[in-house]
Image (cartoon, rainbow, N blue to C red; front, top):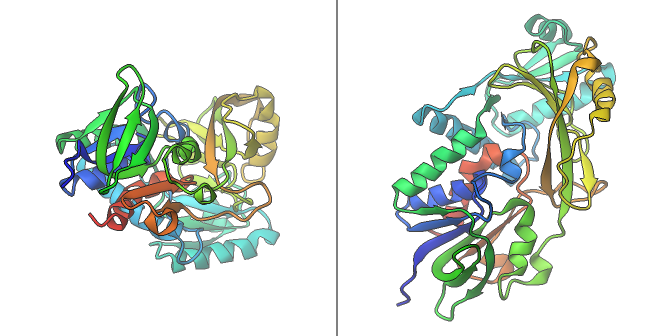
Length: 370
């Protein structure tokens, strides 16, 4: 019987990779999580809205619908257990004009189908009573939505993996893997201490480099590697008192949830992200975009002081669709699609991937039959 260095190797130490490592280590497996960067969570996980999503929007029966709701429940319990800071502030999805009422009704019905707790339909007056200054023709209230400190969460996941005897190894890029004849994989790693190691199970969750990692696994069918698209989103911060306590979302746009508002854990108002498809990851923020942001925000907050919007940061989402394509589900590709027993390859883990991360980890462990 093959003697492996690790039971499982996970590629990528962002929120999802660490959650996969956590789920596997909780089942008694010896786990190594490999991270190319010098710190955990430096990719997609470091440049997001830090929103805990309720699970309102996603199609019935989709992984996004199920794993977002399951992941949210697991996430709040995990944050409580580890005494990590969060605000379950709730979220208003706002129709700013009558033409958006039908979209709001569709979202409400989908939220109920997805088993989202506590949903309420509000009149414009009721929404404004909760958040004075809001322009609302009507709104939906999702009380389970919130914000949290994602890096603290990832540090706690790392701690759990290590407490279970696993390793989270930084500055260790994945360079390739080869299936072994009797099952399992040889994994080639680079960095200051380039080496090879063996494992029974291999999970790839490297976010923006998911396609490149899959292409470096010997025997992975090229037609099972989906085309990568990069969805850039920028954020602007308000240099003034936060106007609202709850998350404020307009109805979603094609391919994203739209530029929204959050009051972060530090009490500051942040708006974003927008969506722009780019040919390669790009984290620049053009301060001149403030005028465009102000025009969009003015729909739900007419009094936004445009001169107090300051450029903050940008993130890039690992999308599997182009600007005019339908938005696909999370892709968790196992041996039934690529033929490599013991390998689970994750693609397109964008929003609500952070909220879903613990449930994604559980799903990966379940599909790998551990």
